[in-house]
Amino acid sequence: MTDEELVKGCISGNPAAQKLLFDRFCRKMMGVCLRYAERTEEAEDMMQNGFIRVFDKIETFRGTGSLEGWIRKIMVNESLTYLRKNKAMKMNIDIDDAKYVIPGNSHVGESMNEKDLLKMIQQLPMGFRTVFNMYAIEGYSHKEIAEQLGITEGTSKSQYSRAKAHLQNMLQAEKVS
Picture 1 (cartoon, one colour):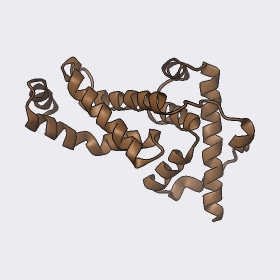
Picture 2 (cartoon, helix red, strand yellow):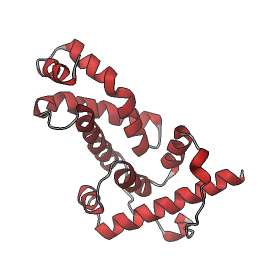
Picture 3 (tube, helix red, strand yellow):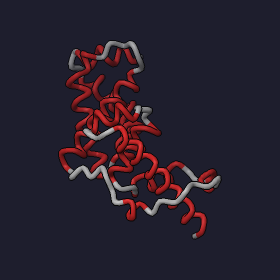
Picture 4 (cartoon, helix red, strand yellow):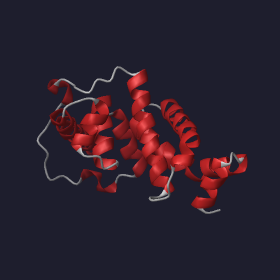
């Protein structure tokens, strides 16, 4: 079934089309949600809320971009909504807690697999993790991140820089152990 047929089926309320849409995209969208969550259970909640939103708003999909991209954007927004509702959104962290080091030309992570990197991203403090995901992975600008999270553009840039440094420290520690 094509994406267009799938959307039409979901708009008409066809349970088989809804199940097919969920089955087709749930693994990728779980990956999106896992990047924002600390635990698998949180990611599952984010994804469930996201798919509820997808089915609720499916008639607004115009087909100008990919269906996967449209669903991904909903998942990111629902993940951010979940974090705002269920966490004290601590977007700033004390610089002493960041253990910032000046980045070197290290290639420690070249042999890491995706699961290891995801685990490291999940270990980042929430503010770092959220900005890192939105900027480095989802492609939002710092201005868009600032608007979405209610922070300044400078804070977004700072959180991203600190997230990268934090990840580099974690990669260095992984190489040593």
